[in-house]
Amino acid sequence: MSTQHLWLPYSQMQTAPEPLLVERTDGVRLHLADGRTLIDGIASWWTACHGYNHPHIRAAVQAQLERMPHVMLGGLAHAPALNLARRLAGLLPGELEHVFFTESGSVAVEVAMKIALQFRFNRGERTRSRFVAFEHAYHGDTLARQVIAPLPADRESASRFERLVAAHASELTAVIVEPLVQAAGGMKFHSPETLAQIAAIARRYDLLLILDEIATGFGRTGTLFACEQAGVVPDLITLSKALTGGTLPLAATVASTHVYGAFLSDDPALALMHGPTFAGNPLACAAANASLDLFEREPRLDQTAAIGAQLLDGLEPCRRLAGVRDVRVLGAIGVVQLERAPARLEALRRRFVEHGVWIRPFGDVVYLMPSLVIEPGDLAALLAAIPRVLEICRAANEF
Image 1 (cartoon, rainbow, N blue to C red):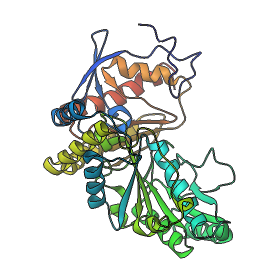
Image 2 (cartoon, rainbow, N blue to C red):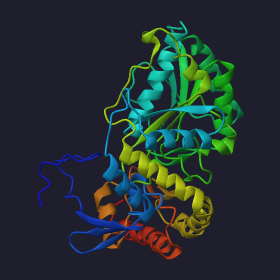
Image 3 (cartoon, rainbow, N blue to C red):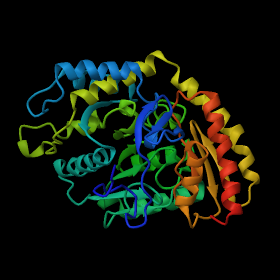
């Protein structure tokens, strides 16, 4: 089957190798068209928290498909979206009670930023139109005129961050941060104390706090939401990826009552004028409701803790390998950071496939973010492959 018309993400199409053709998925396995089977170590970009094809989610989507695959949310509503919004509001901390659905995490962040800007506009604070984001973050690098800061890691750097905020406070609307893990920026971790410091500074200078929990939400860091570990309640939170258990695209931007109230008026101009065509798709909402059922019925957080313990033990030997700078684990995330990015990244990825696992390093990190239901034996196979492949690639001068 030809891929000549397919433009792949994060790929230089002139040099990228042909992608592997997946025929079906099951549990934590990818079954390829050529007959090979791979153990998936990254849960399809961190989405398939319950594994692939979970029967409860599949049944919920099938039942919803028979009733109604889609209906617009403009002037209409439906039970799956209403139920999901209610459940998310009940699970999230504080007064995060108003749920705006979109189709992807990137759009959820865009909506959060639009809400923050219009919040100021609606309150007559029209000079406050800039954001604080952080170095290595997923957001901020393509937006002109934003304030980009290092993450504060100690008292001294927190003081520098506060001075930066104070200098720009009159023009700032919000600070946006990925709590505990900057995933796309290189799987960089920071402490709950750092997150709490950022939140406190935002409060002192009347900045809205936006937490991007697209990668960290739904058990990945050891709590249902990463912000719980810092005791922080944001003004806006974004959710996606594991929201539907990796079944269908869906995202949510959830606002506090305080933020939501700034949009309530007799004036139509004060409404949030954003409306994704497939917002709150019933099939996706049915999948998300079924995913939340599984978090209620099955011991996902206990499984996260067990995965974390096995990751700590299984990745420890990598510390002794030449070319490895750091090994770190948080919840069900395990990271081996190399001294430098491999010159032949695709060769490293190919070696993992040859060892029967789907591990996709990027930049200078080799990481695991498996499904939360992965069995110890499958996780052991993933862990064994990492030092083996790194040693082979090192010997072949591939990194």
